[in-house]
Length: 229
Ligand code: CA
Image 1: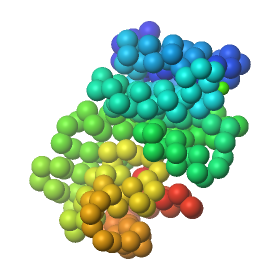
Image 2 (image 1 turned 90 degrees about the horizontal axis):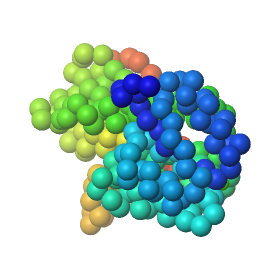
Image 3 (image 1 turned 60 degrees about the vertical axis):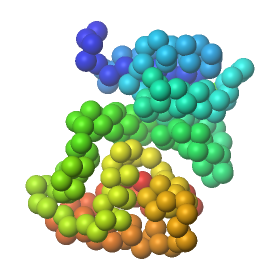
């Protein structure tokens, strides 16, 4: 086991589910820590500072929602991406899960392949943060200092709002952002614009990114919002 292997923490009370996911993560050469309860999970998260946490919503005792809230409220653990697992597919639950700070939300039963893809996406985000002022997502590079954006090496011209929107997306690839949250964070809470404005600017951003060809990196999630990747 090398120190450079990404380390993930699984917090799930059902041993069978934990074993399957653990087996699959290990075969992708991740180091895996396991916790069978929320309390144990919080303890390990604080001691080990894993690179990623997969967290079940339904846990005996401290619920997944509460575990997530605690992880995201502590300085030493708040930057660890959390993927929340839930048997509840209701959109309202999904939004609630994301509002407690979860970075992604996966509904059970899920395909292992999809789960591993989401794990990779979250770990990519951690790497992007590690390069400092530059955010990187696939062939897109955003330089926070010079305010330049390139895709496959060619410069992309963006308006200030599109730039802020893209940098917001690039800080957390894979995360689904409800329009209201984007309004709050990109435009500010006190501006009198409606959610339709978000659609307009996301449209402009897509158009600008498509100029150099390549796939549309932004996903529209019906009834939920937008995500990068
Ligand atoms: Ca459970």
